[in-house]
Amino acid sequence: MTKALQTAILAAAVLSVASQSKAQALPILECVEQGENGDTYIAHFGYFNVTSATLDFTAGTSLNQFIPLPANRFQPSSFAPGVHRNVFAVIAPVGTDLTWLVNNQAAVARYDPQLFCGNATVTVKPVALLLPPAGVWVGVPLAIVSSLQVPAGNLAVESLGTINSDGSLSAASAGNLANRAGIVTGDVSASTPATKTYSIELRVSDATGNSALGTVPVTPVDCTAIPDLSSRGSLTQGPLRPNVGTQTWAQTITLTNTSGATLAGPVSVMLDGLPPTAFPANADGATACNATAVRGFLRMLQTGSSLAPGQSITATLQFLNADTRTAITWTPRLIGF
Amino acid sequence: MRLHPILWTALLAGSPAANAAAISITQSTALLDSSTFTEGTPYYLAFQMTSAGNGDNDALLSNFQFDTGFAWTQSVFDPVSGLFAVGPDPLDTTGIGQLNATLALQVTAGNAYSLYSQLITAGTTFSFDVALSANYTPPNAPDAFLFQIYDANFTTLLYEQTLPISAPEPMSFLLVGLALVLARARRARSTPAPTL
Image (cartoon, rainbow over all chains, first blue to last red; front, top):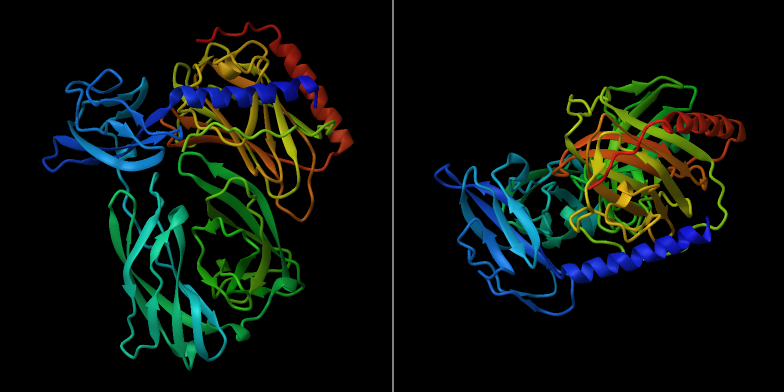
């Protein structure tokens, strides 16, 4: 690479810093939702103060105004450093664009289904509880929750917990899950996990106040009885494909039967070594079996399906990625589940 | 969050380009929403590099041709991320719309994703050339350059072309290079469109 190009990159970095400093505070349209009477909509706004100091722009002045009038719609006059989501809401007639101008930076709201506030969702997956045959286990994965709303912020998991009257499942962990998705863990006591089925109720809320209730069935399975099929096939990973609009990362994976015999389902691929900042949002389950870290897995072949020798099948992983500095890398392991 | 990068790392010194391609979008290009690339329509262009842990890789884009279209002035709302550089004048807010524009994207061990985006109004065609470096360590997933087109709200993905990084294959590289030279010669007859 030429020295001129390196100089250009450095200059661009300087430009980036300069443009951020000039912008100072950026208004953010979070999302819109339909008003009660159908003739109006509610726009939710936040802001991003890129500086390290609180900025003051008096509401209703030319530096902090709404268009059309009234210029003051009860927006904040003081802007604390950092990102502040869902700070206030404004009601406007359907068909009227609403522009919030802060120091010449604009956020425009309009009644558009693409801007609608999404609903938090609890992903109801056949989360497999892959456990040793019997005992008490702490911090095992119980459910995968996610919200694909953009923006969503953290997910708050509340009122979750047990459910079996015999107390064999203790309270699951609660709290905020970053990155719009995560694994809810809990403590489990079971004597015969392969025959016990639990049912967990979760209430999940996103940053805009939407919430959803979900029931997640959990069937513990003795992980020592699950065969490792890694020698029966190969799995290739395609390039990662970010979607800037949905903030998800797709990756096509291909399973090929490299053995001389038919590969019968169920077959899942375990994502060993995945960095904790990345999460497979469409995972079919998760386990901490034989490992210190919880891992997700994706079902590639269902029960009753099979792959002939040399035959391949593809699937797409959908990742949520909280840290773009760290590469989404993982090592595949095939299991008979 | 739409942040401009403040990170900078020197690009690979002397890394050989192993993959080169000319990407061209025309009015007959089918988009994912069943429409076609339509003259006069605003689109967001997203140029990205993703890393799968193969070390440093970079993409150098050049020869941007907008035909009857043009690039909008850069905005702080244009999503960007990671390590990128627009040239030859990084202070020119027309970005890839400036004369003889180039765009460099890089992924490193500490920066697994780079994104540069800019709004354009489509002409009858849009095209550019891309040259990729060649660090790949099987059996990792390949690092990749991705060119995507979104709607003007940046909500709907309309077009995607992925160029995975692969180990250099000298003969195929020569053939692609020859194709690039021929494509440039053909485009030399067209006049670059003015930019806003």
